[in-house]
Length: 179
Image (tube, rainbow, N blue to C red; front, side):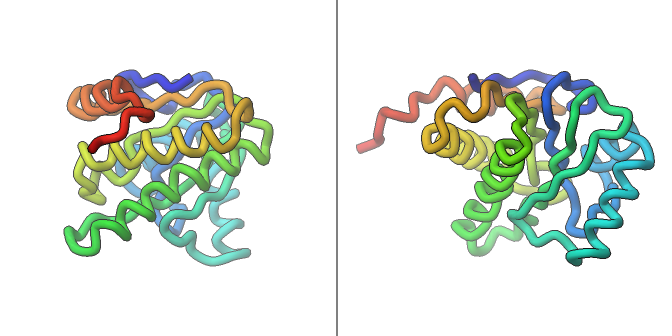
């Protein structure tokens, strides 16, 4: 089941929340800062250990940590693309990869419910309408290829504009092909 709501992802009661992280996993701004602040110092310690072990996280990939003081079991950290306006297909591919890599980690850790923020739509400047289309397309494709693995995916939107875009995109029937 795919749903969307307006709110604060740090309060989501799901198996895992996804963090729109920076490549250094150091709790930058926006949702990344909010998750690190609400989750407490244990998340940052785990992120530092991951970076020490494997280096910075490439765009489109994901890693998982415990959730610290959050209401979920895990935080999945993924890096979305920074929108530059050029090479849009590559940006779309990397954003889709951030969603699918997160779902793969959720499945590997037997997470049945997951909440996503609007990845790359803040300081990374990805066009919000395009991001909603890419996100829903990637998640729908992954669910279709992995039936029964995840029970619920929630998109937690920080602002009303994203909420309306995701609600509109959720109403689009993915089986109706455009001519």
